[in-house]
Image (cartoon, rainbow over all chains, first blue to last red; front, top):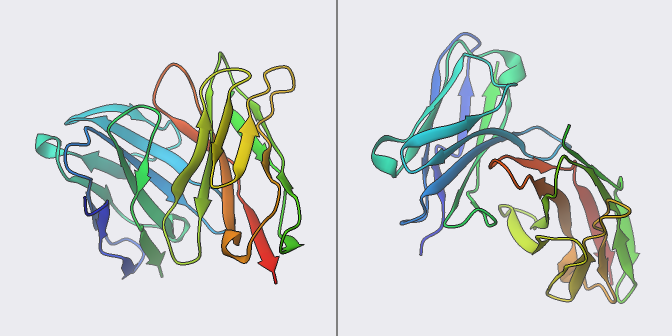
Length: 112
Length: 112
């Protein structure tokens, strides 16, 4: 069990560029979550996958955000036309059960 | 709606002091309740949970009791250690759906 991994750990981009983050969950965890966390705040739910199906998506999530989980393994989160307000830590978590989550170290995004 | 309100920090305590971090929630239905902890330089990890009213979650000397009548899930520890210094997040998950709601976090520093 190597834990949840995320790549990259840090990303600096210019406003208007697209960015993509990757999350590798713990193997055999069928549930995967994406969160966004800004300084001084708790994680904010973005979306949830069960296997390859995206079952829930936050209503706060802009249509510039899209996530995929092909084949029910790793997941990607893409942000198109980034804005300075997108600067945050993006967290991924995986889970074998509804009541537990194992978080990755996060990807810190800075939009200049 | 669904939300979690946490006691604001930062909290500074001397070693062996008693700790209480307050958490109240608003939710439809009967949520599950959680405390997560984030140690310096590490990812979020589950500390304890309770899935129904009057349940007590416990781990590493920490306890929290699910109080439906007061919609609370306060975190307590009888004698804190320097190694407990971390940020603590209260969270809930609705019993329908998979979305988690986190509080803003409470930073705890324990001094020798």
